[in-house]
Amino acid sequence: MARILTRKFYRRPTLEVARLLLGKVLVHESPEGTTAGMIVETEGYLGPEDAACHSARGCTARTEVMFGPAGHAYVYFTYGMHYCFNVVTREKGIAEAVLVRALEPLEGADLMRKRRGKQHLADLASGPAKLCVAMGIGRAENGHDLCSRPLYIEDRGIEPGEVVWRPRIGIRVATEHLWRACIAGNPHVSKK
DNA sequence: GACCAGATTGTCT
DNA sequence: GACAATCTGGTCA
Image (cartoon, rainbow, N blue to C red):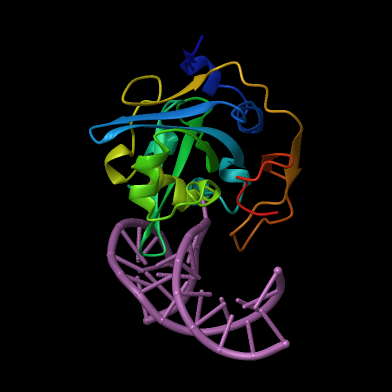
């Protein structure tokens, strides 16, 4: 009953995509094995209006993917050691994206444990940099079309339950917006 | 449990 | 040359 999300899904307004992604399943069919996790936490980044958004200061080599068509992966490197995974929304030329902040592991938990060096399920993908390690996402995945294998998001008909909006985390500016969507009470959300 | 500093490098000024 | 959409391990309680 699983259905890979089409480009149409990602062309919606960014905050709507952020909310609708909760309960959807991110799947990576890597050479080492398949890992999958349900998305439990996301953040919207709203282009020029949003000082915290990488694209707010124009199109550069780094942010180029965000300016492209919806449904592509924007993976960036930060703090000298971490990757973060985003989904590009809207249409070509409108540089907005949704940061996937946390997953609940569904498949390939043993592979995630091996990649992360952690045993506890809630430690495997409960943060943007953690989930990239657990899912094997890195620079190579930047620009990948999420409507196709080996990396995609699918709808398995899971009801996310109650959704709550919170301030965004880990940024220095524009922290007043409630643009972080979480599944209420889910233990895999990055912070309480 | 809460708080703090260190790791480490791509990207932009 | 400064800083970053983070995580981890240490210290102190």
